[in-house]
Length: 228
Image (tube, rainbow, N blue to C red):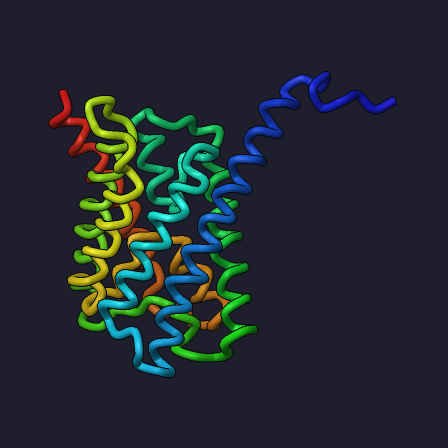
C-alpha cells in the first residue's frame, strides 16, 4: 500500500523543494527566452538595438520576480543561489534543486528559441568581445553589483520590499547597458550554459560560470559587511 505524500517522512518538504525548483525553472526559462530571444531578433531585424536588448533582460527579470518571488524567492541564477547559501540566507540542501531547475529552464528556453527562430546569433550565447581577462573581470564586477542589490532588497527588513522587482530588474538592465558590449553581461551561469549547449559552442564559457560565482559571493559578502 502506498502512503500519501504527507505521510511519507520528509514527503512534504520534498514536494516543496520540487515546487520551488519548478518556479526557478519557469522563471529562468522566461529570462532566457525573452533575453536571448531579443538578441536573436535584433540580429535579424536590428529593430531593438543594444538598449532594447538590455531593457528586455531587465523587464523580464522584473516581471518574473513579481510572478514567482513569493514561491521560490526568484533567484533564476545559480550564482545568486550559491551566494545566498554562503551568506546563510538560503539552505545548502536546496541548492542542487534550484541549480537543477535553473539550468534546465535555460536549456529548454534555448531549445525553444532554436526551434522557433532558428540558428541565429548562436542562440544568444555570451562570448567575450575583448580579451578573455577583460570579460572575466567585467563579469565579476557586474555580478557583484547585481548581488549587492539583490541581497539588500531581499534580506534587509529596512529595505522597501515592494520595490525589489523594480530594483533588481533595473540593475540587470543597467549592467547590460554598459557591460554588455564588453562581456555580454551574462551575470548568470545558467543563462550562458543553456544557449552554449544548444549552439554547440563552448569557447570561453568557463568565464561565464566562474566569474559570476565569484562576483555574486563578493557582492553578497560586501553587503553583509556594511549592513552590520
